[in-house]
Image (cartoon, rainbow, N blue to C red):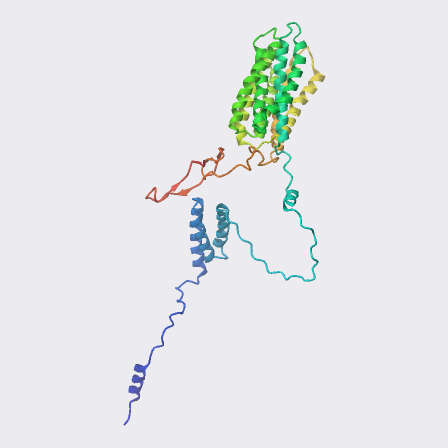
Length: 434
C-alpha cells in the first residue's frame, strides 16, 4: 500500500504541539521604551511639574516626581535639574543626605596603643567650647550700663536740687550735691535693679533718660530769649530726663529692642543734635535760641528714625561706635579749620564752616555704615535669642514669626482645586507667619 507524501506531511503538522510559554518570563518592553529622546522628554515633563509643586511648597509630592525624573534621565539635563531640586527639597524638609559608607579599614596590629589618660568629659567639653564673640553681652556689661545711667541721672537730680540752695551762686550747691548723688546712684542702683532687666532693657531706659534730659534742657533755654540761667536749664533737663526715663521704661517692658537697636538710636539722636548746631551756623545773625530749637528737632528726629529703622537693620554697639567715630571726624574736621580762620568782622566763614561740617557729618555717617556693613553680621539679636527667623511664606510683602516685615519675592502658585474648580495661577501679595 502506497501512502501519499502530502498526506503524511499534513498528518505530522496536525499532531505537532506548541511549546508552552514561561509564566515567569519578564514582559516584553513596549515599543519605543529604549528611546533616549522619549525618556528625556518624559523626564522634562516630570521635573517641570516637580518644580511647580516645589514653588507651591508641596515638597513631598515634588520630591517624588523629581526622583522619577532622575530615574528616567540619570545623565540628561532633566536629571541634573532633578538633582538640584531634590537637594533644595531636602533642605526645606530638614533631611540630610547620609554619607556613603566607607570601606572597612584593616586593623593594624603593629599600631602603637593609645596610652592617653581618660579625661573628665565635662572638663573636656568646657575646654573645647569656643570663646564667645567680642560683642556678646554679659552680666558685667549690664551692671556697667546700670552704673553709668544711674550715676548720670542721680547726678543731674542732685545738681538741680543743689542749684536751688543758693540764689546767687547755683554752682556752689549744684557741684558738690551732684557729685555725691551721682556716686550714690552708680554705687547702689545696681543692687536695687538686680537681675530683673537685661542689658538691652537697661540701655533702653538709660537712653530715654539721656535724650529726654538733653531735649528738656534745650527746651528750657528756648523759653526765655534773654536771661536764661543754669538753674532753668538744670530744671528743664531734670524734668525731661524723668519723662524720658518713663518712656524708656515703657519700651523696655516690651523687650523688643536689642543692644544694637539702642546704639543706633543713640547714634542718630547724637548726630541730629550736633547737626542742629552746625545748621545753626548757616542762620546768621546767630541766635542762641535758634541753635537750641534746631538741636531739639535734630535729636527728636534721630530718636524717631532710630526706633523705626532699628528692627530692620543689623547693628551692634561695636559697629555703631565705629559709625559714630567716622561721623564725628567728618563733622569736626571743618570746625578745626574754623578755629584758624575765624573772623569776627564777617559771617561768611561761619556759614561756610557750618555747611561743610553738616555735609561732613552726613557723609561720615554714610561712609561709616558702608565700611562696617559686614561687621557683626547676624549678631543683632535679642538677649537669649539665637538668630532671626526667616519663615515667612513666599509673597511680595512678608511677615516673619519674630515680627519683622520685609519685602519678599514674587511667587506664582497654582490655584488649589479645592478652592477653585477652574485651573489657574495666583500671586500672593501679603503672607505672614505667627
